[in-house]
Image (cartoon, rainbow over all chains, first blue to last red):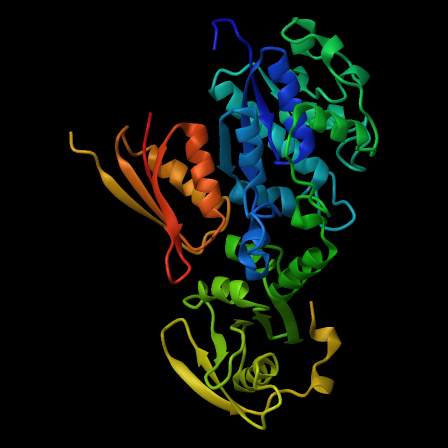
Length: 347
Length: 78
């Protein structure tokens, strides 16, 4: 890097837009490094890696893959704890589900601003496109993000910069505004054409990159809060919401049942934290028991667990219940018949 | 100084946590030291080497054990 070269930190999500935004900066001789914030809700990497059925696919972190294509450093930063306040107390409210998109963007740009200042960088770049997202990427919300993050006019959005007032990097001549873009709306064709021109390989996640925009996930998170009587979570809570079948047969307990080998393997990592159930005489899933289950609840949980194993048609199945303290009890149960498995139990 | 050999237990962590933990561990190591990261997330087999390439660390060994766990061993370059 030459003396005097300006430096930009780009919020690299692993998607196409931020990849292109970074590349546009490189085209103008800017030194670019990527930053990627791990909130715990990122779709990226998680369920992709857990399920054995996805073994035929490359389970890679897309932000790292983008950074490799750009030839830039990527700083992946754990913001799980700090991010809780964004999820629990969004100043601007939620989107369609539990997605606090505007607060999230302000938070991330704010973290990038602090990183920029600590590391002697000059400005922040995002892949935002005017009008692409209903909550956070609008003409009236762009200034909110710039203001609340403290980034102000050191926040450059190269893909739509020509539609916005000039920022500091443009006014100072660090970047040539004429070589920036004027993309808007939800049509992705210009980005796809540009990616082809650059020869980029990129992911196109269906359903976005955040579990909080997923109605099924949001429902499970709400159930977690309701069952606790308070809105709080820890890291393991939000990981487990991504895995397995979730059934709440009674308010007092919930079962998480692995759907295949990869999920069972993942759930095994929680044996020392939660009571867990498995069949000792038939193949079947591992199930975690969460809540405050009494003896009657445990019997029902065993019957449900037996229902999801290969002994479901057997008259009796032995289910072991292991506990975090290492103790174990065995329960011989009749697998719950299909008609007694209430559809409303599924979260 | 004799290079250190350090092991990092990143089992039961999912992408990108193994990379984040490896990155934190590297800050405690010197150039030439060796870090071996033990994971259960098969994605780590792609992610940690990719991160090593970006950071300039030298991957010495990576693979899957019979029990399905994976590991990546690399030499720190600073």
